[in-house]
Each structure stands twice: as structure tokens, then as C-alpha cells.
Image (cartoon, rainbow, N blue to C red; front, side):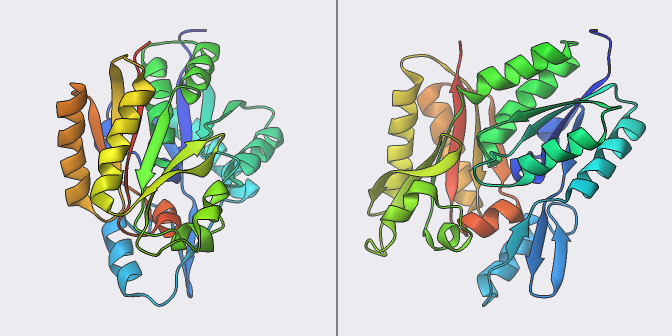
Length: 286
């Protein structure tokens, strides 16, 4: 049924800027951030600037939590009612770094009367965002539910997400470090270049300076394009907007691409990465 109203649902780790969502039917489930005695809904009760101001001066690091199954069930019902939606296609943060995907599946089972599909993005942040945007554009173009799911699953295997961080401390404390844990204990001035592989965060290489890490990131991006054109890219930053803006210009210049989206990493993702991170998510044209 091509005339069904299909809404794409994702979680707040996707960090998609509002401008990129214009004209698209995307609903965002907020994750939770707990900080001392405060509980915030990610992207609803606290925005990146306020969050990073507090993080830089705080002695404690906040923790994050996925929404409960009950919260997701309520979100599904409210979205169907408010959007008059026939189908909800969920594209969710990798199950290997968050239990959000598991809870979305459990919520789906509790509302069999609703037409809900669930796709594991095997990514997060900007990598997840690219898949969500492709699915939402397909929905806007009148594609069927099966076609939208197929587009999301195809892109999941083609999206690359590389990022440089100032320190592994935050990833380690948050338990999101994956194979990068073997870099712990290396020289403190090492700037690791990380990537998503198999749905989790893995080390790619380590260099001495952030400048070299960013240069290497662009070299790796070029290698992974395998001679093809870059179709689209998102540049996320973690409280380092100047580095993000500079990277946009370098990506446009090097890869001849206009479609580059800038995003500020949401508080829930930022709490695991720490201030000073910058990255690129992209995929090649078919």
C-alpha cells in the first residue's frame, strides 16, 4: 500500500538537527540522562550547549538509560494517534551498545494491533541518522513499508562512521568501549581514531594529535569509498563546533559533495564520548 501514512521512528542518539527533518515524518524517542539528582529526557529537557557547559565543570559524569518498554508503548500509541499513522518503521541505535533496541522489540510485541517494524541500525549518532533520513525520504516519496525497511537495511551495511576522541575515559566509564578497551593504559596523549564495526565501537588507529587523527579520518574515508562518489555525509561534533565546521569544508573540498549535514552530538551520546570528539558518517553512491 503506497498510500499508507508511514512514520519513521528513531531514538535521540541519532542527534538529527531539526533542519534536516523538515518535510519528513520522523518521531524521536528520547533516551534518559541521570545526573546526580536530576533526570533529563535527552534532547527534550536538556540541550547540548547546556549539557556540555555543566559537564566541563562537573566532578561527576552522568549516566544514561534506555526508555522503558512502557514508555515506548505509550510513545507508539501517541505517535500513531497524533500523526494518524498507519505504520511505524523504527530505526534504532545498535543493540550492541544500548538496550533501547531490545526494549523497542518488547514494546512492539505488546501492541500487536499496531503495524510496527523494527530495524537495528548497527550504528549510533551520525551513522544512525543517515539511515533514518534515507528511510524517511523513502516514506515521503511514497515507498511501501517493505521497500523502506529494505532501504534501511541496505544502507546499514554501507554506512561508515569514523570519529576521533580526546580521551577514551568517557567510553570506558560508560561501558561502551568495545574492542577499543585494549587502547586503555596507552600513553595519555594518544588520540584514538575509532569506528563502528559489527555494531560496536572499535579502534581503527592511534595518532599523537587530534589534527593528525582528523587528517587520517579523511584518508580512511577516501579508502572506504573505493573510487566511488560520496553520496551524503554528516559531521557530528561533541562541544567542538569549530572543528566540526572546519571538517565540513574539508569534506566538501576533498570529496566534491554538497550534501553535508552538521550535527551536535546529543547529551546521551556526549556522556559516553566526552567533550572534544568530531567525526564523519558517510556512504558511497551505488
